[in-house]
Amino acid sequence: MTPKPKLINAQTGNREYVRLLGGPPESVTLRSGAVNLNPGKTVGVHSTENNEELIIVLEGKGEFIFSDEEKLEIEDGVVLYCPPNTEHDVKNTGTRSLKYIYVVAKT
Image (cartoon, rainbow, N blue to C red; front, side, top):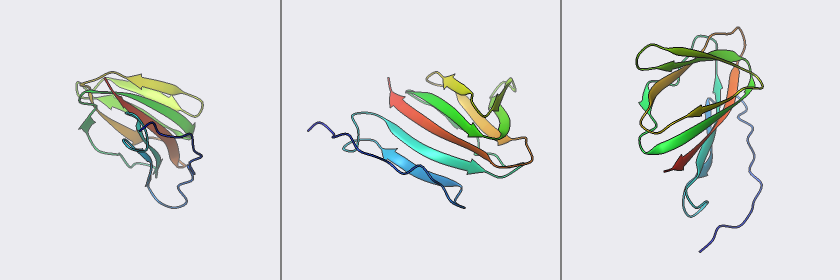
């Protein structure tokens, strides 16, 4: 069965994480969520495994940290692409909330 178009509320309120899409049957392969990180917080080291990931920064600034300690600075208005099998973390380095939406798709 093919999923139907729908509107999804991406507001996190005071919550750190809100699931937006959980994969099938809500979508064909996409999973996504809205993240609200307080200053100094991280999401924790994890891997994209066999997925591609897109991060759309809505507000704030931070770092996208790879397992080899390489870092990419992220801030509102930036879209970051992360390829499959990439271990990484996201850290809020700013003084206000870092808010972003991630979208993950199986390869």
